[in-house]
Image 1 (cartoon, rainbow, N blue to C red):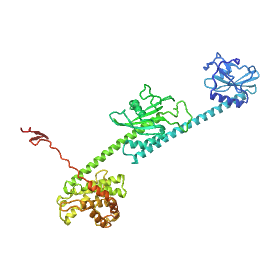
Image 2: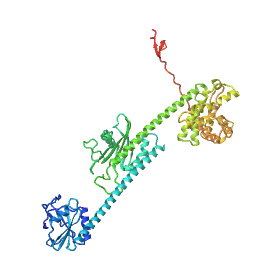
Image 3: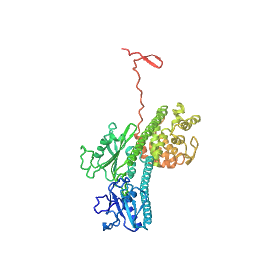
Image 4: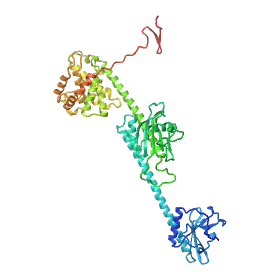
Length: 564
């Protein structure tokens, strides 16, 4: 048997769950509940441990300890080791006991008459079941809230990735990494919630840890010196994986010096840094500084980071963003390289055309410049403007298949000669139609000699049947032909060519194209006056003129030394 006493040792307070169970038991039985505690949490099935009445935990609190009956130690130990309510009868009094936790170091006891014992045991069992179901419901509710928060976070990340991809593929920000960062960092920061987020570019690609702030956004931007220090200090580690730092301080980093021996950086209390690289090539860094507090905090668990700290989720999202940006930047560079290669190929074809007739050198390029300006006047932009420029550069490529005698003839062409030269749009189409990515320039190459009245070639199209590229190029081509010098005549003044275009509007040329051409005639005249022929490159000889080739064996040339 155990004797309760008012002189029990200092005891820990009941946990929230234990107190809740006592309240449920009190409400169910309608009588006082006594709480006993063991001097050792490890209940081993013997009666060597001492039990004390926890007078602070009793419901309601006892006022007279001498009124309390003796509780059998065996009942307390039995309850401590059981998952069920235990009943014992001492004389005319019944006692029901139940443990309050898994350890069994807290036991609740209710007293009643002998006849009330079984009822009290059932009430204990029912109250405990209700308490457990309530705990389960609360735990489930908390888990649901956490799951909803995680799902919301995942949806935010998916939404961000979709928004970023749309931004990158929209054509609004395809110039360079800086413009890409301008477009994507604000979207990224809606999820990361950094007070300051920066794209750090590299003035010298050979020194990846000396970085300058290229794009900085956020509600509280950090100065560029602190951002540069962050890259220098944590960049080497970030190359192996994203670096996340959260300093447990409310007093600084603001009081830190730039070059102190501590880790603190002025203005920085939390940090994420990830590299932006394409293969072995470093392109820059993404840095997030100081987490914005959440406006809608959720219940925190011990394993959750505080809302003002960065975690692996933010680091992963930034690393994914950096990877996408780097890949997109590398793809843009490949596209630009491909475009440069395409333009070089086009210029080579143009040079091949113009090498057949030195008197028409520069014609294709001037027509391309006039065409681009006229197309812009009409409303072309972006890819359409680029396509029509290339189309105009190559509009006469089919003349490669026309004989030099016909091309260079000074007098009037015979019907046979005219028919031969009228083949050049079809020849041009045949030359270019199998070149990938040049499909967009074919309409202009094929139809720049059609007439508004249907009397042109090669297809005799009429009015709006003629593709707009062809109608635009027809005006630009005619203007350059009229104002350029030929061996047999001088080019006419611009004013006369303009008058001829106006007179032929609605007959030979599209009236709206002629009107637009006259509307930008100032720029057209300036382009013509400022145009200069490109110098043709000459190859340097492989050997001195005094050297003589003796013979050639299996492709190797043997040279005699120069004579003295």
